[in-house]
Image (cartoon, rainbow, N blue to C red; front, side, top):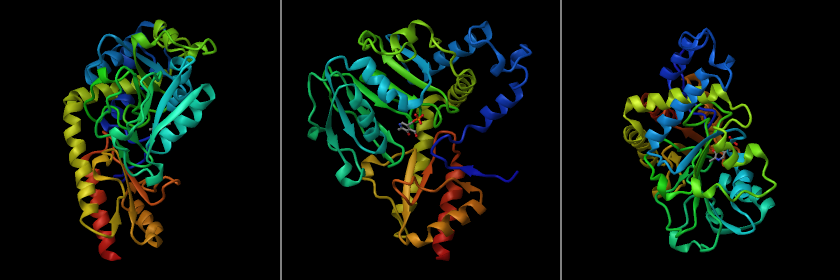
Length: 358
Ligand SMILES: Cc1ncc(COP(=O)(O)O)c(C=O)c1O
């Protein structure tokens, strides 16, 4: 097999060491004679896997005891509905729109009550996060929703606003575990797994305990955070294999030195690419420097008629899935935790070659 680097936005590259371990354990997990896929979710083997995954995630993100960790299904898009069902009550909620994903969150939440868009960068084509002092926050909002890394637009928050007593609910799907965060600043953190955590099918929700009592009566049991937390995320059969792989990814991250260590690597990788793009007018990134994502880097060729040639040449060199999202166009390199720095170096070398040739 030729060496390839996979720049997909998700499902995305997983650490090689994790895949190799999963391969070695595929048919017989720790002498059980079973694959993890074949185990009862309530058996002692899988319960051990789930508990270890939760403990390691708590260590990685320094999650306090008064937060519950839920391993759910339905992805981050289901949470767009699950969040208002669990938190909105008869009140209103504030949303900030900084890209395609937070825009979608607003659209989905509107079915459940009054949603106020208190700041938006849509007029700037989602190229920054509006200055916090311009946000028209409501002190009596049930919660404030943000997406701290916009996967499609490549926009990442460079801090957090002061929301007073209003709980901040953050979609961190595409940068969770890429940098340290202060969990206590949030009411809820959630994310689909298929970028920095593991395979698709798993959605992680980290929720402060005092927010568990607010669900609308219509909330189905599987989407009711309190019921799920009282049932170890097992109201329905959880995505056992995805949880197992997520657990291996957490172990891998811990072995590297945790999120503090991976952040340093992520800074290096992102700088390599942004510095090169900024040093030439052949390629363009339109995002405000302070809000450039370390994980998802959209870029454009100045001469867009070369797009197909760029992608074809990249593929020939094993640089895969660089086509930008259809909403944005151009190219996008997603360089999650599992992308080695050699992958970014190979991409930059290819970009240089291509520039020279054209
Ligand atoms: C920031 C963000 N939010 C939400 C989603 C939707 O996730 P899912 O398809 O798992 O529901 C994605 C997926 O790419 C995302 O990047």
